[in-house]
Amino acid sequence: MSLAPELRVIGRRENLRDRIRDALRAAIISGELEPGVVYSAPALGAQFGVSATPVREAMLDLVKEGLIVPHPNKGFRVTEMSEEDLDNLAAVRLLIEPPAVRETVPVIPEADFPHLRELAQDIVDAAELGDLVAYVEADHVFHLTLLGHTGNRFLLDVVSDLRARTRLLGLTPLLRGGGLARSAAEHHELLDLVEARDPVGAELLMHRHIGHVRGLWAGGAKGTP
Image 1 (tube, rainbow, N blue to C red):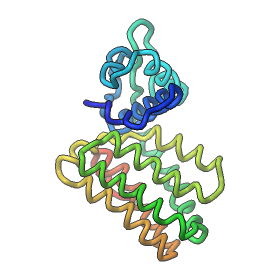
Image 2 (cartoon, rainbow, N blue to C red; image 1 turned 90 degrees about the horizontal axis):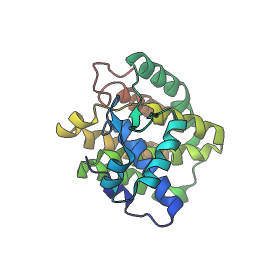
Image 3 (cartoon, rainbow, N blue to C red; image 1 turned 30 degrees about the horizontal axis):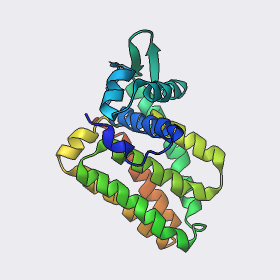
Image 4 (cartoon, one colour; image 1 turned 30 degrees about the vertical axis):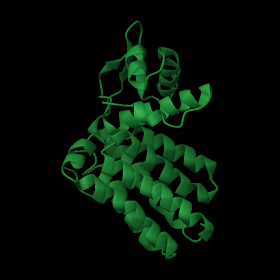
């Protein structure tokens, strides 16, 4: 596991903490940091090429998000999610995200299309590089940017939290089987529907997309809802 590439654009100290937190969150979601395992700040700092202090600060942020729990004098343990928990998370996301995407389709300015395409391409590029941490983070940025056009910050907070608690432990075998690139391409397909001003089509695709979270991407036997 290598987390260091995620720190390419770091500048100021506060950005360092933020970038480490985002990279760790993505590593937890993708399964690069394994559920139930205790990780120490010094060991992770060595992978990032930084001291333990900003890593420890970032991990304390993730404690507040419920993604890890502290183990005194040892480090932090990644919390485990039951299959029932993940099913319930996906069910809530299906209630919220597809209708929200439908609402954004008529209001996204054409001038914003190129930026959204760049964000979608970041996901494709990460898949092609086999960088699961970058993939998860790019996916997170894309969807929150898209939903940001609703103008509803409470919606963004809820979706961000639900996505952070999701586990995509099936991404590694999906990557090995060549399926991750195909899944990444769905983001461009979604933008095709957005640019065509097809809200119903975008909603249906988003429904299928979230279905993958509990199917292909989760590594389980569940299919698309």
